[in-house]
Length: 456
Ligand code: BES
Ligand code: ZN
Picture 1: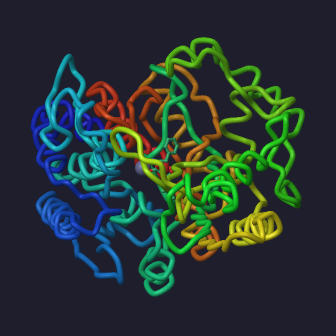
Picture 2: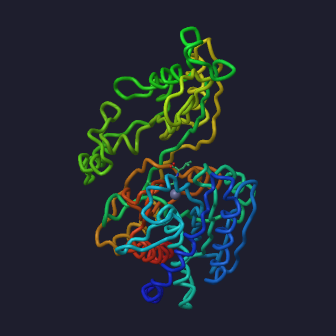
Picture 3: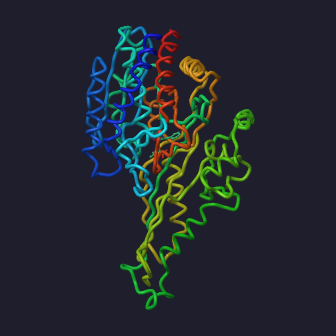
């Protein structure tokens, strides 16, 4: 391990330069115009995995974006780590708010700025560099390594469950290792043991067959935008609880022990609100901010449109109103069932003056993973050595849809050892990743491999 650590230290500048090359590829999975770029990123990664000496690497097609798969089996008797990451990124919009262009990575004050710098190219690349450090120094990785790098995470991992089903034999492993989550705070080592799930909907109300003159028709035509606003407003009560009947049915309640753990975390609600410019927070009644953003289910409108939104005034009574709605779920809510309950709410409350169209776009369940496994202990030890203190075990409000599939189809728990910070602006303009964390991540992964190998 010492040789690998030394190699990572002396080659760090090369690692950063290589990451910049990867970040230059605009692999935006949700936008069909970028299909070829997504594939180019897959090819780049496959070439890189070959260059660092992985025994077997290939790009595998799916009905969507390709999967990059690589493996290096050192000894079947050793434990096998399946590394998961995603090489696709979110769209960079709004472009005008970026200080430097999203796909022209630059380093300012030890921080690398680009779309994907943290989520997840910067973090998945740490795993390639940790593997390289072992491969290049001749001792070889202490564990068997498999890489599963997908290009559809940011659009819901639609084709990955099918891929895992088709390739489950070669994906056999002892544990999944993922760096696609956050530290609890700067310098605070953290292991995420819970992720929220998701159910994503699109709702359209259609009234008249075309946009109408609001003077000639207004008064006798119910306005779809007004109606949609009313339906949406009815989705929460005064306690900020979701009103969809049955929404909370299967929610696993927080235990008193878990709530005490939340209270013990060094969290400053006021500073948290200030960082995002909020005058006040709003949580489901009876829950702290930390509980509400990671361990309770939510419903949020992601976008709403219809009618005239251009410059100046246009007196129009719109034919249609649209909304995109996401619900973050916790164990044991089932995404399809929650989506059906939402559909029932909209159907029951849609006025007779208009037509409802309801689409369930994608979803996945929330997860909680075992914190006492040997892999977790190996991760905790690695982080302690790098950060000089014991890690916190945290739950995150974000979603990584495939984690529940790893459990269900492959029987594998995931160790979520991420190095992002909430302030890294993932999905926002000026996404960035501190090079200090890039370095700590690589070192933690190198150490994890050695400690985990010793558990056998
Ligand atoms: N890396 C994030 C998830 C994340 C961020 C987890 C921070 C924990 C802390 C991931 O790439 C992501 O954004 N996922 C999407 C999934 C969705 C599109 C299905 C999400 O959570 O919105
Ligand atoms: Zn991510």
